[in-house]
Amino acid sequence: MSRTEFTVMLAFVMALQALGIDAMLPALSDIAAELNVQDPNDRQLVVGTYLIGMGVGALIFGFLADRFGRKPVLLGGIGTYCLFDFGCMIITDFNTMLVFRFANGMVASAGSVVANAIVRDRFEGDAMARVVSMIAVVFMIVPVLAPTIGQMILLFAGWRAIFGMMFVTGVTMFLWVLFRLPETLAADERQSLKFGRLMHNFRLVITNRDAFGYIFGAMLVFAGLYGYINCAEQLVGEHFGLGQRFAYVFGAMAVFMALANFVNSRIVERFGARRVSHTALLVFVVTGLAQLVVAWAAPDNFWLFAPLMTVNLGLIGFLGGNFSSIALQPFKHFAGSASSLQTTIRVGGGAALGAIVGAAYDGTARPLGAALFGLSLLGVLLILYSERGKLFRRRKETIAQVEGEGPA
View 1 (tube, one colour):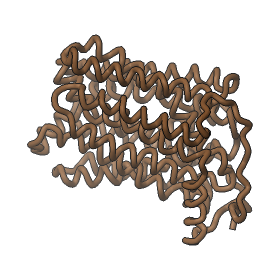
View 2 (cartoon, rainbow, N blue to C red; view 1 turned 30 degrees about the vertical axis):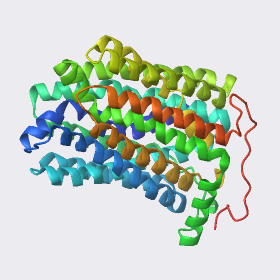
View 3 (tube, helix red, strand yellow; view 1 turned 180 degrees about the vertical axis):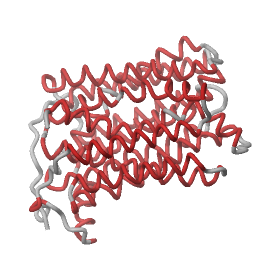
């Protein structure tokens, strides 16, 4: 398989997860109306339960991928993703919808967790960060186009057709992976599923100081992003009065995340993942503070909100892939389980905090602005802990050699 096909395939495998979020955003009000949802903020649960499910599922699939290999676990995740999409297409009860969405998010997590492990099997250090960024460039096509696709489907069919589109997309990816993706984990490197082994790997991940700040720092930054996703349809579509134009605005903002990932892929090997991500995080704090000030001083001004939110989204393009690559670097011999735990913390913890941010929506951008500023500031403190008080250093990456970390 060429590197181009490798990159595009893994990008679209990971993008199945994002498709389950972004394509649904224009349909939230329609779903709430048809399924008799009373509290306007409850419509956010269609997204929030999916995000939390992603975090829970991430805890499972990495360990399975370390034990049984990358390809069979990935195929299992994609296959069940298709089944739950079909289930969401035919349900008639909101609570059942939330159960199916949680399960859908769980199995969708297989894509990102196993894809990260596959990349770690083949690359390391800044080279890995570059590949992750290139994957993210392709991946970001989905958040750019998905809301518009969802909106266009709503013009000709109901919200159930969006789940039908996701089902067909999942089947397509299943067949592509089945026939083209090679197994990247050698048989002699597979891990035991013994409880003691799992707890040992957990301990190594959680207690590794070099990784700790990047895992939890990413969680806090992504909590701000998920908080925005949860309340975006209400904030942009209703508060700022953009209505159906919300989908196009959301997609336009996502373009800057794609551009940031592309730029990151070009500069990260030259400047180093740490220097790039540290700079982006500090700028994120400043723009988060500006967002909070604007939300109080001019709460109804979309043209002040939008540029700042766009910058924040763009900065995540310099943070996500780099933080993930740095945090995974010490764990070559159990990259799947390390990716699992780290993704659970980053996505599950971020989704839980993001749900709180979304639920705090009060008809203005003030709760979101406070979250973007406060959470990113805490993220800086965590990175300082991992870096022992010194930012912008370009450190030579080494693989942690811990007794018993190899296959068993």
